Image (cartoon, rainbow, N blue to C red; front, side, top):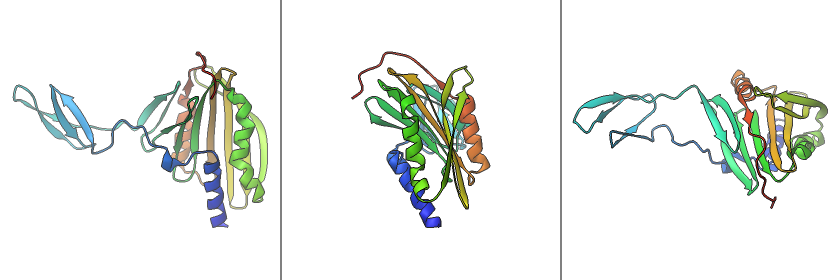
Amino acid sequence: MELNRRALATSRYLALALALSTCLPTSRAHAGDYVLEIDGRQVELDLNHSATAVLSDGKTTKLLLRQKTEQTWHEDGASFTHPAAFTPARRELSKNITQTIMATPSGSIVLVQHYIGLDPTTLIDVMINKLSDDEVQAGYQRTIKKAQRKLGDGVTLAGKIVHTEHPGEAWDREVVAIGDHDGGFLVVGATSDSSTPADFAMIDAFWRSLRLSIGGRAEPLE
């Protein structure tokens, strides 16, 4: 049974083209590989380790680099905050579709897809099927209900919540979108009964801080 669940989880995300191994994180730097330019000179820094910089006048100064516990992602007209323990990854699915995904080891995810020239609200059922059809075929019970998600800036996304359940495992996936024929956003949040408090903290921070830039000139969809 455990192997079957793992196989389902794998096929589920492959079907969505969410293979994290091919999504390269877009962090601007990595721990142990930071470079700070100060007074015209470069100093290499490690997180939480002090370093000494020599200034142009010969004086020295102590430097210490720390990482904020909560960070902000901003790309493709979407922004949100997230715990530093989890790193969003961005991928271009086509010229007119970009995807940002953030996942935890237990499989909880947040997903933002930005569309240009295609109405993402027409894709809600497609996404729900991609996420849950394999489970239904494996004997999971599936229930779907309507959902709305109002962001902090007043923007409202509409869609559905799909719940799948099987002895020993249950998933809740919220799929909401906003847009028109010019484009917009499709957003997914997914948790299971195996999600940890850190998972829920990530999901809560995401929904609390998510902001979407709606509008703009659309290019023809390729």
